Image (cartoon, rainbow, N blue to C red; front, side, top):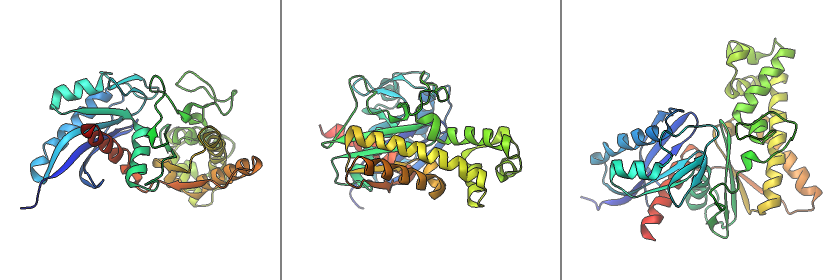
Amino acid sequence: MSAVTRAAIGVDIGGTGTKAGVVNEEGEVVARVERPTDTSAGTKSIIATVEDLLQRLPELNVEVTAIGVGAAGFIDHEHGSVSFSPNLTYDDPQIGEALQSRVGLPVTVENDANAAAWGERTFGTARGSDHVAMLTIGTGIGSGVVVDGRLIRGFRGAGAEFGHVVVDPQGPPCSCGLRGCLEQLASGTAIARLARVAVEADPSSSIVAFSGGPGAITAEHVAKAAREYDETARGVLRRAGEALGVGLSNVVNVFDPEVIVLGGGAVEIGEPFLGPARDRLVDLTNAQHRRPMRLDLALLGNDAGVVGAAALALQGTLN
């Protein structure tokens, strides 16, 4: 019988789904589970997902020594708690304490985008780089930044939140309390909102056909229409992509990273969205006479947050 492998459980909870995996020291996900997120009970969703995986451990030749959680919101890493989350309610903000008391293992709690950035820096496309910025673009926009090999958390765990950098002060209101945040202009939610407005002027757009009606439009419907060369859909994605490019320029100006990594479900839209973002970023960096910026997609894909959370948990047990 082969030797037992040391591992951790990594959890990535977002606005729509909660993913978890058993991750070994080489960054391999050896078992995984996913559940819909209860947006009114985030901590309950985390515990249920972890317990699903723990029941599977007898099938696996691993020893789980810790649990890492990547949670959406402003995270107090030291105390393992959520201080603010604009898109998700946690029934118990003391995530680390609640989970540890339930399963009896040490728990590390980190912002979800920080965890994803750490996953890409440890095992993904930014492996070996000590200067990394990552944006996760899905329901909202999260961001994680590594400088000199260390995650930037800020004084109260709310550092480097580029989803809530204001791009348009007159823009739509954001659940964080501001207006015109990048999240309101370039996330999956923003794309859907822009499309609902756009089809009022063009009700014949195939966006409507794919969605079944303006009120049901999602970013996925816009992406499908764009692949059919629907001009209204491509115009919506161009606007969102250009806003993303402005946000990326802000990242460059603040942190001067070696590499920017883009992850999250919205990057799967592809070039109709990412092309304008890249072009806008190039225009802005060229205007400042900056060096060319390396812009990559997450190598770990949707596993980045799970792998990064687990890696941080394993690292915590060694410190």
